[in-house]
Image 1 (cartoon, rainbow, N blue to C red):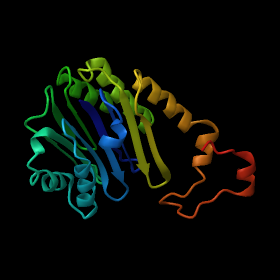
Image 2: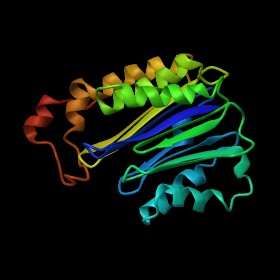
Image 3: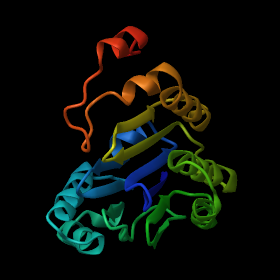
Image 4: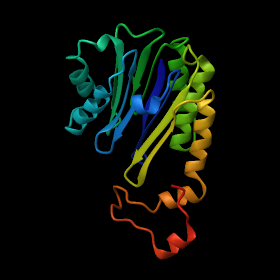
Length: 231
C-alpha cells in the first residue's frame, strides 16, 4: 500500500522522511518526527498511528531504534498487519514487517536510512530506493524526493499512487511538512510544492521564525516590510 524512506543527514543533523501510497493522506498516516527523538514511518494494511508516536517516545527516552521498534511491536496482537520503520538521532535504524503484510513487502535498514514498502509490484523497488538514496548527490530533501521517484519508476504501489508527503526537521530550521493528500500525480505535485516552499519569498520568511537553535527569533521591521508571508 505504501513505500517510504527515513534518513539522516550526518553533516547538518537534519532528519527527514518521504512516503507515497495508492490511498489518501499518506503524510498524516505514515510520517512522524521529533527533534531529540528521531523519525518513524508506520504503514501497512491496518497502520497504527499509535505505533508511530510510541516509537518516538521510546527513542526520546534513550532507546535505540531497534529497541524502540521491539518495545512497540511485540505486545500488539495485530502486528502481523502492520509495518514500522524507525530512525533515531544517531542514525541507527530498524524496521518491522508483519507476516500478513500484503506482498511484495519488506524493509531495508541501513546506517542513516531505512526504506520500506508493502503492496509493491516487486521487492526490487526497495533496492532501487536504497540505491538512489546512496548514489544521488545534492540537497537532503531533493534526495528524498528522488528516492520516491525511483520507487515509482521501478514499479510503484501496485495500485498506482494517490498521495505523497515529505517531512524534514533540523535544529536550525522550522519543520518542513509537505503533503499531497489526493492527486492522480502526487509525486509531480509534491515536487512543485517543494520548490514553492524552498524558494522565493516564502523560503526567506521561513528563515525568520523560531527554531531549536534560535528559539526567540523574530523578524525585524525591515524584514516585515520586505516580506509578505504567504500563510
